[in-house]
Amino acid sequence: MTQVRVRFAPSPTGPLHIGGVRTALYNYLFAKKNHGVFILRIEDTDLTRFVEGAEEYIMESLKWCGLIVDEGINEGGSYGPYRQSDRKELYRQYADLLFDRGYAYYAFDTPEELEAMRMAAEKEGKTFIYNSAIRSKLKNSLTLSDVEWNARLDRGEPYVIRFKMPENEEIHFDDMIRGHIVVNTSTLDDKVLFKSDGMPTYHLAHLVDDHLMKISHVIRGEEWLPSLPLHVMLYRAFGWDTPYFAHLPLLLKPDGKGKLSKRDGDKLGFPVFPLYWPYGEKARGYREDGYYPEAFINMLALLGWNPGTEQEIFSMNELVDAFSIERVHKAGSRFDPEKAKWFNHQYLQKRTNNQLAIEFREYLRPRGFHIDIVDLEKLVALVKDRVSFVKDIWEQTDFFFKAPAEYDKEAIRKRWQTNTPDILKELASILNGLTEFSPSSTETAVKAWIAEKGYNMGTVMNAFRLVIVGALRGPHMFDIISWLGKEETLNRIERGISVIGTGQQ
Image 1 (tube, one colour):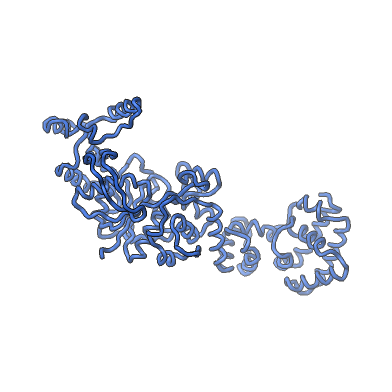
Image 2: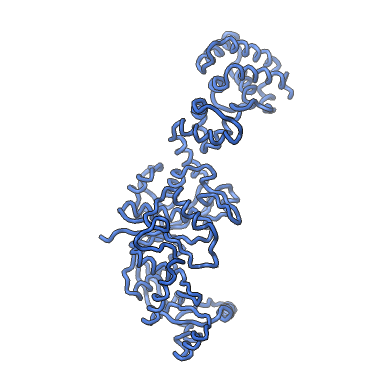
């Protein structure tokens, strides 16, 4: 069997959309499942759309995602260069080969002339297509004499080389996801393959590169499906073996209506790029939003592919073992931002308290808090079940680091009674008399006191929580005060009584 060789071939025209990351992921999984090679090729033939920094962004994104490139610009390989602009001298000979074989021709129509023909067709309610029905009426090497079109070239007139699509011929081909497809060439136009600026279009360049790099399977987004008949015809014109094709479904908006875009993320509050994009119109990224790369990849893998089981959490190795192109959906996959958070929550729970404490420490240091790692381990253990991101730990634990600056007015109205200050003073006395301040010892002593005095447990504990936390939130109260220590606990009780008083802040 021929070695499996796949490529991810993005254009450096801006940040890498998560749909592109999913394409890279499926290529990677397919390669590793079949003991093949995963190639990164940068397709930068459209110089007008090139964006500085985009190439580096693509590479950093794949690295963060754990998609290790086997052959590429940095990795090298036997089939380089892996940047199309470094290969531009290759393409002209293949355009000439198609011309010499009668599969391509020179066209000299100006953009203004073509636009005028499009507008004229629209006025008649028609669609202008540069194909076999019209090329015989236009300025090209099929209609001009050899002397005339060669003279145009000698004068340096702008031109393009177009593929000569056959007239009224059925093209049969297969897609690994879509099945057997039949297209009539009368519906297709004569695509531009090469321009007079010396640069090929995508249609020619990617196909030549795929052939020379011995790509066995082309796995790409469904936006390229309409171009597949042309690409199949180009392979046949060159006399080359056609690779296997698989066109992946779109990633859809959360409501399922249309392709997922940056605008959707901006509107609904989630990123659509793997990393923060710092250039031009800046955009947030999954990495900077606090997602673990493993969670991000796990989430993406299941957007368009079904393992055939109920399993949802996969390591990269498990994804490789389970992946198959045959189980990729044809229909688009709706993106669910809440499910993305769910995946990150699952991976956060899998991390040890020590790992989370180290990560949370990096969040605390810029805020001026330098806490012993052992204490932080105890802290994250109390709240990890409640959070999806490390940054959320702060929202669940801010009162561990600073006493309340104010107290929840609604909680005071509902939970604070006239005798509450006196009860809390008694509670402070009980706590002050303890020699051990562990959660179990404080809980035993306080509950015994409440029972002895006949107080209502909820009334006492709600008031207690209010003066310690500032609101009716947080983990187990006795875990909180054990972490704070006796002195800080007593100080907060005293201050709470002083500020709230009889119930008026």
